[in-house]
Length: 212
Image 1 (cartoon, one colour):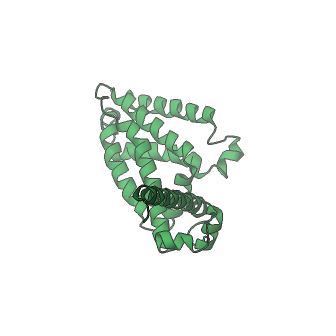
Image 2: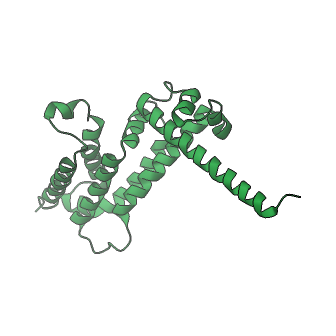
Image 3: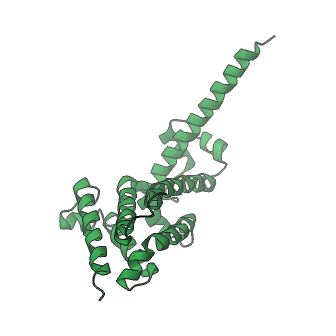
């Protein structure tokens, strides 16, 4: 008769193996989808990159579309966690300018640290409505609240300020292989990121102090 303790240990190990395999597939899929897109990626290629049998990705996720959706969900979760730093509790005493600087800093750190988020976002922007649009819906709602004070002092709508600051944060990473090299700038260089944070912070302060 099988030892129940041994059987439980074996079942736990199988669960751990399944979790590791699933994670390896998701990592490989995210890298492939970000680099060559949905149409340029096959489940077989993902399996090879993950070091598993070609049928394993389909066994875990069912289809390439389901796997892609799972990848997007992970990327969006990472982005939401990263931006939570800009909306952390306990910062009610910040000035409007400091709140805007916190938003800029968190967003630049996200874009600088998570290249796949940028790449997948760029690809999704060309495809029409997507799951990432849902992330930006929440992103905008929260940013409007955070930037509301600075926008009021600057005499512009919060939506306008969200658009301007988001564009100025995103543009260097969207063009890190085109315009940025021509300018002699590496978008992911920590020195550039620090300088960009200071530059946009100064821009916000100039806007908020320009009204009589």
